[in-house]
Amino acid sequence: PRPVEELTIWDDAKAMLRKARAEGIQTVHDRLDRQTPHCKFCELGTTCRNCTMGPCRVSEKNPLGVCGADADVIVARNFGRFVTGGAAGHSDHGRDLIEVLEAIVEGETKDYRITDENKLRAIAAEIGIETDGRPVMDVARDVMECFFADFGSRRKEVSFLARVPQVRKDKWAGLKMTPRGVDREIAEMMHRTHMGCDNDAPNTLIHAARTALADGWGGSMIGTELSDVIFGVPTPKMSTANLGVIKADKVNLLVHGHNPVVSEMILAAAREPELLARARELGATGINVAGLCCTGNELLMRQGIPMAGNHLMTELAIITGAVEAIVVDYQCIMPSLVQISGCYHTKFIDTANKARFTGAIHFDFQPRTAMKQAREIVSIAVEAFARRDPGRVDIPGEPVEIMTGFSNEAVTAALGGSLDPLVQAIASGDIRGAVGIVGCNNPKIKQDSMNVKLAEELIKKDILVLVTGCVTTAAGKAGLLVPDAIEKAGPGLKKVCGALGIPPVLHYGSCVDNARILQLCAALANALNVDISDLPVGASSPEWYSEKAAAIGLYAVASGIYTHLGHPPNILGSETVTNLAVSGLEDLVGATFFIEGDMVKAADMFDERIKTKRKALGLGE
Ligand code: NFS
Ligand code: SF4
Image 1: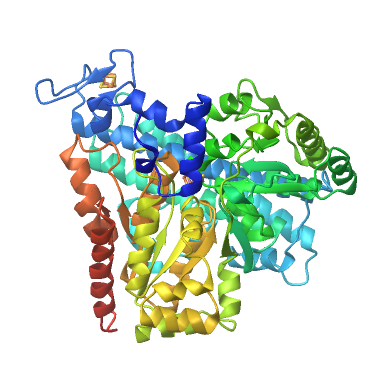
Image 2: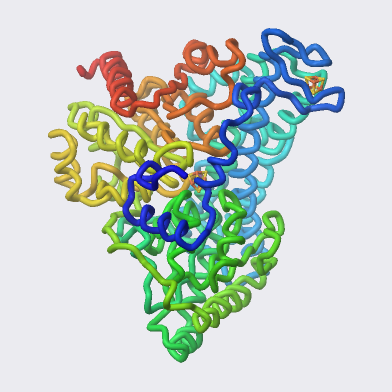
């Protein structure tokens, strides 16, 4: 096995990887070693399993599949389906929030409610729903109907395109890239990639972009906005991160997955006096709910719960031996967590019928019964405390402080009620530009080495960084999410963030919350009366692994945002597809991907791009 020093930059991770090895527990890194080297055809994207005349593998020697499809067609189809998997994940999550809103509107649940009526009315107004003098439930019903309709086939465009600058919308219309309905684009991609349909690689990629846009401006944005309505708009607050947030003297319950619908209820149940009393009876001093991955980000943003870790910390959190239960909803949950839980007293509890894990305790979590079910789940965690083996507990290190809660509403409020001061700071060059660093860990990359390095390099150059998803914990553990981090920033960023008392790296939420960054870009573009592609902004996913990250990258590019990936998707087997991704898209949508594994160079690329965009706006470098 590779030395643990090569696997991660973090001491807490290294300690747990050593413990895993000592205890004979396999982790993602061990399994990666066994899977390496990977199939070359799959890596290049030149394998097709779309029908049983195949499967086919194409190469220079053998350039056509049985049906006659060449590498361009096969790579484009594979990438199209890959992106669509991600768009489906985010969007189905968004749909679940509409269903919770429906349960509220229909009076079927008392456990969820409309927490932020102002936000509901603001959204309604934006998408053309009458709000004046109407009861909140009437407005909510119309919003619900409108968003359900956004998933269907009768719309010319999804509702939140109301936020997009007209020039950008015209560009999309000209390219047949306007996202019409979320489910429609997803289904159409499956259709197009059936044998004998869309056999023109660029055309397939245009639809991949449309599907991604249906995610970003549709499913994800609905997910974010309705989560704010139901659970509250995030506001700035302090919290902590790393495995040290797991407490030896408490019942530790980890929430993992993506949807706050489950985790919010778990947190509420964990605060119930009877459950706390039972925990004390068993010798614990309390119940500690800590977050993993994106549902952790959701609760961190709104409720300030501590973050135990990101993607590659999920197995390691259980290996502390101090986790009573891990409660999951869906996405990014390694099935290995069930096996590792089985090595300890840890209860693994799944909550979604669409994401069941063999060997898990299953709850079919429903809005009608949410609180009752959450109490039962917390109770299982509390009872498990009695079976913890103190001899196997090892919690590495002390937590670090982080600041969180930067929704667009919170940022606007901090700026005194409008985005004008931000526009001013960009115009003056104190903030030269902004880059969103988002996404995952990938065991092929030393954990968080790139996520942290890129953020550090950018803030030095007076480029504001926004982080979401698994980059949050990375930036937090590196000390970049506290106001003191301005000491690591360039002079302009230091001045602006110092005056506001905010970090130079802002936590903007979970991965669906990248929709907040889209919204911010659209608002800035509208304020300056330009297209999004004219802004001095960028996006990056240095350590990405998932289909969802690919969808995010593609909707960012299609929205006009220059986007960095730390390693390429499996498209290199087609020159046509690769060239389109890294240069051809510039002419079509005003932005491209760029692939760069060296974060100093990646930061320089962003710097150059931002200089060019600033000059074009007449702002100087
Ligand atoms: Ni985004 Fe969130 Fe993490 Fe990556 Fe997974 S948890 S949706 S996909 S791994 S950031
Ligand atoms: Fe092979 Fe064509 Fe079938 Fe794909 S669709 S498996 S390339 S025959």
